Length: 296
Image 1 (cartoon, rainbow, N blue to C red):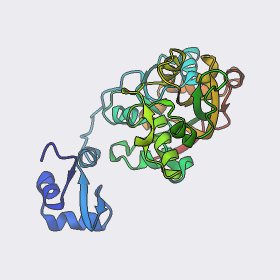
Image 2: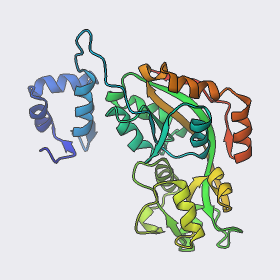
Image 3: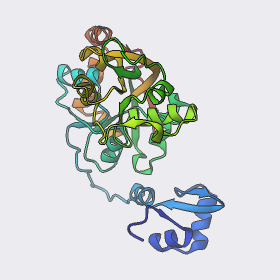
Image 4: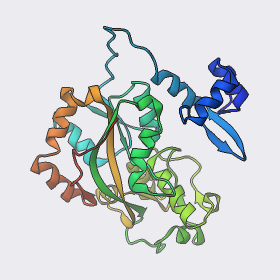
């Protein structure tokens, strides 16, 4: 059972050391993470772990271990620059949105940069994704920017790629991103909306961790296209085919929000130099910068 990703009701009851009747009561009250599939309840084991950890009793005087001064999650050129220029002392560890949230739950980073996507309302996906994580019961979501995502292509767009269907029909070599990365979630959402199976795409054998990695692969003729931001395309002299404007947010715990590194960064987001840099890079709308979108 320890290796199972999803547990049945009886397995989950054993795992949580409670009676099935009590577990059904929690399910009925929406108090435990679960999903109904083909008439049966399934319980994600990782979500159960986070649910239990969220209710951890903390005695008086208990102080949580401070997280390392790192922003995990998604890579972004404007964020990377702002972390340096603000004097925040925060480093960027770019592994993808979901990986950043995982690390934030484990207290391995001070914040996570995210741009989540699903087949529904992408504008609310970041907020919904944070709320769904029981281990982030004390999370604050702060706006950073809206940014433009699309296909990076070779200069001049020699394959005339305009849509995902063009990528499939022309058998263009597309670079994928790691599972849980925002760009990969966007690709899956675009494919779902167009009724396309991702296995139709001719993709590189290994994923590319960040947008710049993808850009360098296109410059080196390893692949023909991939999803990243307009800013990455401009910085690497590539063509860009726009797909969507997306929401790019920062997630951190309430205690971290009030600490000096985070406050230096948020103060910098209000400076005119930040807006000028965003305009120079291209593909950003920084009107949401610093806005509190969720305070759990």
